[in-house]
Image 1: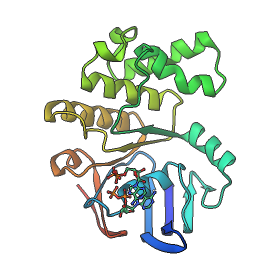
Image 2 (image 1 turned 135 degrees about the vertical axis):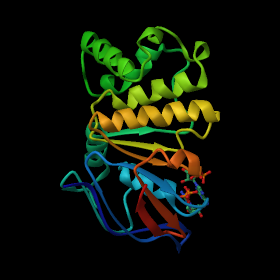
Image 3 (image 1 turned 120 degrees about the vertical axis):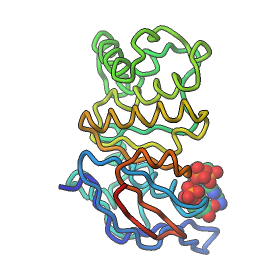
Image 4 (image 1 turned 60 degrees about the vertical axis):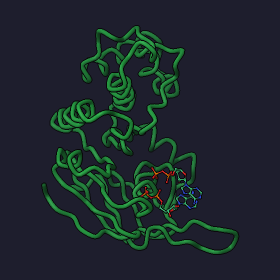
Amino acid sequence: NSIIHLEQILKNYYMGTQAIPVLKGVSLDIHQNEYVALMGPSGSGKSTLMNILGCLDTPTGGKYVLNGKDVSKMPDDELANVRNGEIGFVFQQFNLLPRLTAAENVALPLIYAGVGKKERLERAMEALKQVGLETRSHHKSNELSGGQIQRVAIARALVNNPSLLLADEPTGNLDSKTSVEVMELFSQIQQAGNTVVLVTHEEDIAAYAKRIVRLRDGLIESDRLN
Ligand code: ADP
Ligand code: ADP
């Protein structure tokens, strides 16, 4: 069963009234527990596709079924519920709040979900344990390395137990040794039962994924198991 089902996804951006097609008919199925790398040249539409997969944006045309729900034409407020309930997002810019500790940063999504303070901290500690950082829970960003900061961001993405973990260039700001550690962490997360989809432009990083989908000029150019 597919967690992600895309049928002929189209996405245009508009300059005034002029439509600029960016995704030109993307069809793709991703099953539960897959580990997929999305590759392609700059401007090929990777981030646009990730934003649609993450319910941060809706397609201009085509159909997106996430976990059995058609989200292609969902209004923004319903889309926000799906996003908060089912999707964890990791960015290239780590987006941690510097004045908060690691545990407080990880617990943030639970505040929006209305979870009480005690349970928030327990669940944040659990997520930090998953990424091997339980001993760093009380540290702030300036006391953590780049790789540790990205692991905190991954813990924050996992704290809601999402069915889908999406990451846009998660190693883009990390050195190669730290990048490998982060990719191995994604492998562990996938082996624990999550579905992981990430964007990278580095072949040796993509090699950690089980399946590589390549975009070119808004279309899927190739899709193969690794
Ligand atoms: P990639 O992630 O593969 O580099 P993007 O999805 O970021 O590709 O961008 C694909 C194309 O769409 C690029 O030509 C980019 O300039 C354009 N684009 C992306 N976002 C917008 C936007 N918000 N408005 C207009 N054009 C955009
Ligand atoms: P990436 O290569 O990771 O997609 P970009 O620098 O292309 O990063 O895009 C960064 C942000 O700017 C994205 O949110 C994207 O949608 C937006 N963007 C990219 N190109 C354009 C554009 N031509 N017009 C408006 N927004 C754009």
